[in-house]
Length: 452
Ligand code: ACO
Image: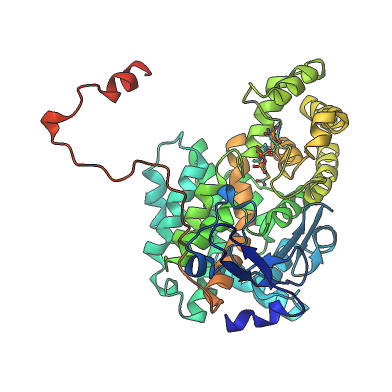
């Protein structure tokens, strides 16, 4: 506990009193540098014999971290103290990667060196091509991402010993560099085009566009405005504190798993429609709405308790205000569609109108449901030419630096313990074992077959 002493300064412990037993327990209160105070309940079970119950971790801090700060009520997101809007307006993705990984914005010399290190790692081991060929052509690119990133541990043995700082850094650089190549190759594979090798004279975002959209038969010129939009997209997705995929990476890493396997676990978690898969789901929803006149019907569906439909791209576990990333994303959407002469895009019009109607609706006001980062991002990616199945892949590319920075921070935390939540047990109490011939004839399988 000694290393938490500094966080206890100026705080009075909270006393928990059990009326039945008369037992009391003092809970130390930790004060971070920003955000709500945190109850330090690590000794609760030892002292009281009780666990806490918190499904979805709505009130539980699983770690201490100095990477990202969010104030969901004020709509604030900061990386290492810098406001996301300032970073998106003034930095490029490489600078943000450096900031997340090392804690400071780079000097010009350090930026140059860091960019070179990342660029030097963008190629994949040539044998990984055979792994791609093992997938069906219609495989979802996120399925390919999970497989290929996990397989990196079988190719780069010299960076899987996480106890060695040098190996941790090499693994981090490899992941940041290779993830864009892996994502672009997943796309190329799905459309049957040859893989395109990375080019060292291009920026991170330009290179990704080049590997995704160029073909060997033609010269491909990257549109600087589109490259800038993709760069901003990566910045806006770079990290977001202890979300589901980041917590997955930390939990996987807490057992001592290698970093490539941990990031593969994070990608799997990101894939779900309640998380990174939402940008794909937003486009499907907008296409289903298909006309502005149908919006009220979908708003009603979203409000109906008996209907499982939700407005995709709306609501957030942490933001109870406008997601600051959504604000930047909305502006990028406008710029990209203008550049591509697509301002009349019907999906954009439906999205703008849907946002307007929802923000005035009492249900969304009462529940503090605002557009999140995914609401406009799909429109940008679709306009640029990405199929919807690639949307979450782009999210994963941007988020890899956040995952690896959080993983590294966890490994370097002296209080790094294997993650092992407890449970409120609701199953059968102890009962006598029954021999097969004495068991009831009633079969649950009958029901399962019928339900098919
Ligand atoms: N549409 C309609 N109602 C909603 C929506 C929505 N998009 N989101 C939440 N609600 C309602 C819920 O029905 C619930 O109502 P109740 O209190 O009457 O039961 C209330 O608002 C709170 O919702 P929860 O699901 O309890 O909130 P939680 O924090 O668990 O969920 C989540 C957050 C998963 C993001 C949710 O808002 C959602 O499903 N949104 C749509 C999917 C989406 O856009 N996901 C992307 C998230 S951002 C990201 O991952 C990058």
